[in-house]
Image (cartoon, rainbow, N blue to C red):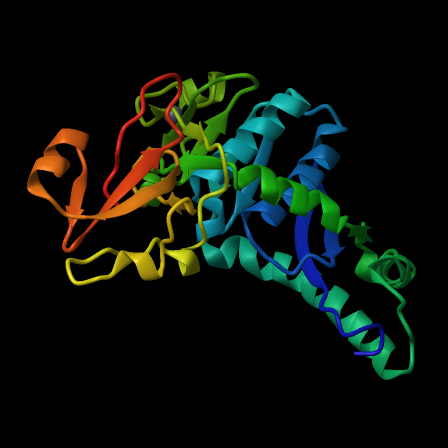
Length: 307
Ligand SMILES: [Zn+2]
């Protein structure tokens, strides 16, 4: 492409207030289409709806994994706290919401591709946004609101999230609709969209809804990425080769565990000796013994961990 070798991600939404629709394609240089970027984009869209002071905001999407993760529920709650409006979060059938919203992104991409093909040069995402604004204004009688999402924003969110562990909310696979209220520590969810009398009065108040308490655990440091899995120590392994004394290693907890990441310092390697092992509480690893230092614990409570 002409503008640069970098890729640009387009994420689109539709904001509908009192039957009037706006199409919102958002462009960013951030190519990690993950929970962080989804959260930032969602916040922008909800901000637009919140400006009209509605009594509730309905956020509908397909039920992709990005929208069912524990982090997403925290994002929705955080946005709800900020805009001070209850959020009804619903998963539509893919046919229902996907076509039109895909179309919004499709139109934006098509316009850009055509422009590039006819020799238009875009220096950066800002220039693309400006171009789209001119091209899409009142296209097909619809209002397009093109925005650039600053890469720094989603990167900051990503870094922030990497220091937290979001505990999976059980039962999410059956969720169809959720109800979030500002400043609550729980949200309500149901496996079907309900418009019963009780829900018309106060949404989520009938017995179709259950309450869920999402949990987040702060980590002292980001967990290790899967590619740096802690080395497994087997009976035959000569530990000296890869863990020299005084090196510090991080041990990631099991995926489902609530435990934080541990940092351990290798104090020494000594040849296993039954008596010594017992005396120091050392853990045997075949021919070698690793004396590992558990640094994460708060206070005085220091324990030795087997690697
Ligand atoms: Zn109901």
